[in-house]
Length: 94
Image (tube, rainbow, N blue to C red):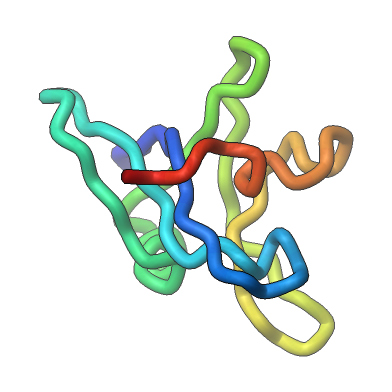
């Protein structure tokens, strides 16, 4: 399954950092930029079409679908267990 590297995010004004992310983005192998709504990224993960990852301190960390107690789905990194909210710290997508 292909994996896309997330380099940036777009955020809303929601107070919860993990739920404030509306889009994720990066660049493909040809260096062409891409962005996806979080809902679309979640769907591609759940349908096993793509996986996503982030490079954190030189190490690859996988992105997976998490869910709040209220049932809202969002993206989370495996490193977030120790590091906090990795995706919200990425720069803003253009």
